[in-house]
Amino acid sequence: MASIKLNAVEKWFGDLQVIKGVDLAIEDGEFVVFIGPSGCGKSTLLRIIAGLEDASEGSVIINDNDVTGNLPSERGLAMVFQSYALYPHMDVGENIGFALKTAGMPRTEIKKRVDEVAGILKLESLLSRLPKQLSGGQRQRVAIGRAIVREPVGFLFDEPLSNLDAALRVNMRLEISRLHAQLGITTIYVTHDQIEAMTLADRIIVLDEGRVIQAGSPRELYNNPNSRFVAEFIGSPKMNLLPCMEKSGRIVFSGFGKNTARKKAISEKFLSAPSSAVVSLGIRPENIALCDEDAGHISGTVAVCEYLGSEQFAYIDCGLDNMVTARVSPDAELKVGSVTGLSFDNEKLYTFDGDGSRLYKPPR
Image (cartoon, rainbow, N blue to C red; front, top):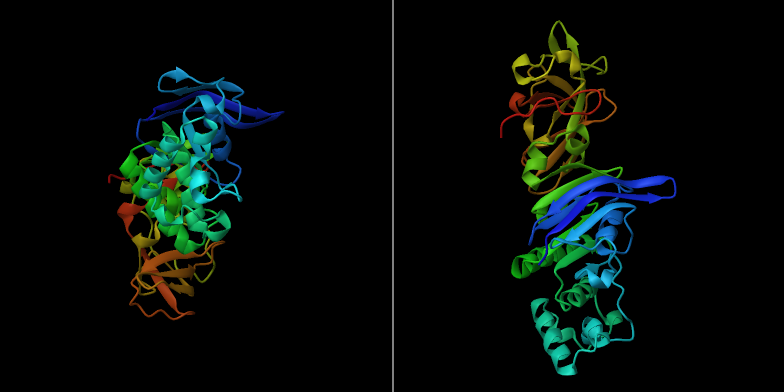
């Protein structure tokens, strides 16, 4: 297993800087997920760690050894790509053991290692099949097996589940989580899917435009985002953000349509900065309660209802550019077109300034 450190890593492609001075320490045995929007640099950063891309500046340290100039094969890491990259003319067993064969390992030892890996991944009955005879999930398990058999000090996953359908993604998430618990190998996992990030990670690294925006546990990032960007990015459905302004020393909602009720200002006791600095308030869907039109902080018209069986989401048109999302009881009967009030849990409000920086961090 390995500890991995990045010291002031930068990456330039010509005049374009895609990684901007990243410092990061990953502990031995930790499961870390890189997440961010498309083009944020997460896959490039993973490839720099793997040695598939050269860092323009900075260093990569694995187990206290500087490997910045080392070849990928010299770093002791195994990478699993988005594409399975299996050899079509080789069966499962041959695919898993190919790296050992090229390294000159004896056949008996290769068979022993392949059988061990097949047992871990429940591939014993598939060892004689060709890749074309496997499902997508089975192919991905073979790709993971090919990485495990090398006995690496760390795993690098680059969006490994994006080619699978929804049901298979859930199954493979469970498989990867179980595998990490069983093997305890340091793992870095790149994804754009925040559900994968929240369910798999010990720690999430949120990236944007080549910079680390925030790092922390899934719970920490969900409950205490340090910026509007993280607040919107982590959570599904995403956090509601409502425009507001100062009025007579208090915070009031602004920018709503003419027919929208603006019933209540926000108490100053929930703010830690001058009210003039606050330009938006954030509230999670689960912290909004529907109520009588005249009883809520604001009101709006029910535009869409999404019934998901165990939960239900109502999308309320309050006259803003985006609808307000509220999580409601799945037993609630909501009529599209009806007018409702929205009452916010004042203790769960988030405040942001014009630059998107967080102004108040409530206790959790």
